[in-house]
Length: 321
Ligand SMILES: [Fe+2]
Ligand SMILES: [Fe+2]
Image 1 (cartoon, protein in one colour):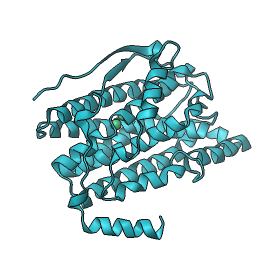
Image 2 (cartoon, protein in one colour):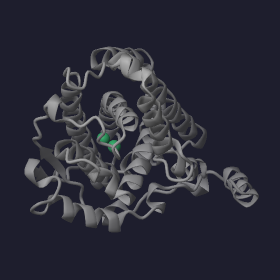
Image 3 (cartoon, rainbow, N blue to C red):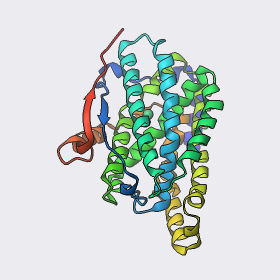
């Protein structure tokens, strides 16, 4: 962070209320809820799906297991706060957020069931148990305002991740595992579509800056602390013998770079965007994703597109007062 941006941050922090930004959602297009039917089979899943790298693919598998709990928290929190909103369009957007997240959680759970298969042998049962304990006894016990800020924080991370993925489309095409590709690309598209909803709800109903930042740090610790930490144990639980080979360590070193390299890693190279959330005047739409969204929505759903074989239907929830 440069001296100038630190100075700007301090100046903005002194005048917080003035900086609360909410999107012009009345003029944004409605968010559709898309149903997919994929039918994962463990033996069809490529353990080197992400850029031909096993370790990075395992990181995403760990994310897949834990994110279902994050999505359940988002759904519960969004439902709780929807009733307090007055604007029918924002309410409709919250209903879309809930619908999209419910289907993400469902499909990721199907994927997670499949990677428990001995072909992949991912420790799904153990990690589900840990995820459940963590969310049930800690995050879900938080008071609603903190859950709301955590929800906005989680959605910031998924928005940054989605944007990185949209800018690195080639990463999805390293293998011919079309089902895993469909799941991640669909999720990427929808996270970007609804990226401003949780934030707008937070700013409308609460807007407290220190609380917003607390939710950010909780999301940061979970996504960039606990998930990488949990990933470290997967190779030993999955295939301990493979760890004795030089090939494993070479793959693991490359995998860590693919996720954390400041030059081009998924999370390493996006730290600036991640920390931009601290800016009091931050808004998710400061990063314009409209061109990416238009490109991917057309490309993924048209004939021959990555989602087309699995697409069942989509619908837009009605506007209700
Ligand atoms: Fe999601
Ligand atoms: Fe989301």
